[in-house]
Length: 128
Image (tube, rainbow, N blue to C red; front, side, top):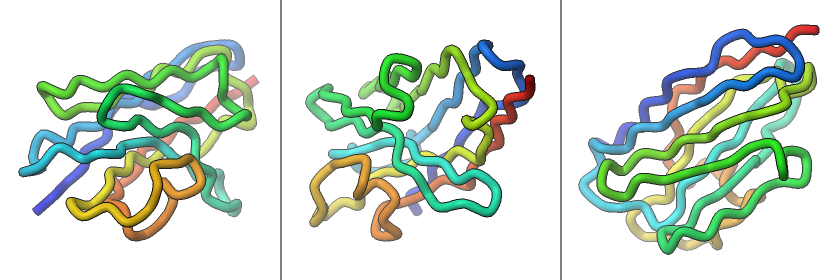
């Protein structure tokens, strides 16, 4: 069973920082693509960042320059550091990882595909 376990998040004020972590250590393979997406209450899923196994990371324009993703291949974990948070960043944040047999390119658009493994989600709330 391939489980993604998120941790971190919480409540912060505008301009503050938060970190969300994703533990994929239970996977029996190293996902070629991992990333993060979010869903504000009542709104659509939004892909935020994807990390390809070779280390390249791509960000959505809405978070570029504010969010940073790092991956520890030895531990199979993915961390997203979020700085200069805004109220519109309030959402449930999800970690995603490609299945063993990847059919979709690793992009912020595809990371929200249900063909990826998803975590259970973790809340980040930004208040003014």
